[in-house]
Amino acid sequence: MTGEAAAVGATAWEVFQAGWHEFFLMAGTAAVTLAGLLFVAISLHVDALIHESRAHLLALARAILLSYVMVLTLSLMMLVPAPGMRPVAVEMALIGLIFLAVTVRQMRREPGVEHPDFPLRVFRRRLMPMLIGYGMVALTGVSLIVLRAPEFFYFVIGALCMLLGNATGASWDLLVRTARIRREAERRAGS
Image 1 (spheres, one colour):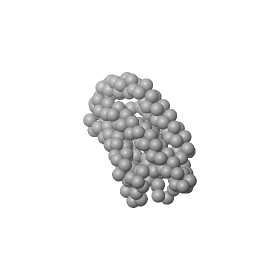
Image 2 (cartoon, helix red, strand yellow):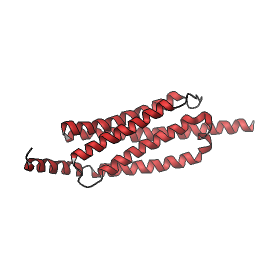
Image 3 (cartoon, one colour):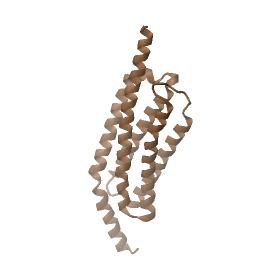
Image 4 (cartoon, one colour):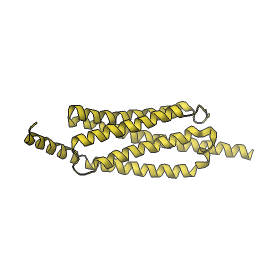
């Protein structure tokens, strides 16, 4: 590629990437807001989360927070002015793979403690969309590196929506189930 053609390609990428500014601003804002609400919800029921038999509840809260951190991290990276396609692609591939590896590791390390109000299958079911979302981000990065086609960037929309939607649903599920566990424990203590 000649210097002139490379400059035109870089300019086209910069224009393309600049068009995503509001999307990533909104995604990052949503992620940080929802992470804050997760902290509030956890602080209300922290005593129910730290019990030994509920380690998977705490692990789910950690996975949810990780999902929000992923969206926030990607959003911050994309809000940097005029990054080139290759650095963006490499960053996407790396963070996708890192978050994927951390989540897989968490799934494998999780103890086999069952709780009737929050079985391990629910925990694992909540982690699967996170794995898919992280994988989509990593594959988008790899596709940008190999094929240099900005159109693959549109897969990020689905990945971030999946991560935010699943984490929000999992947060709600965690809050409701933890409240039920706490209420049941209080009922038994009062009997």
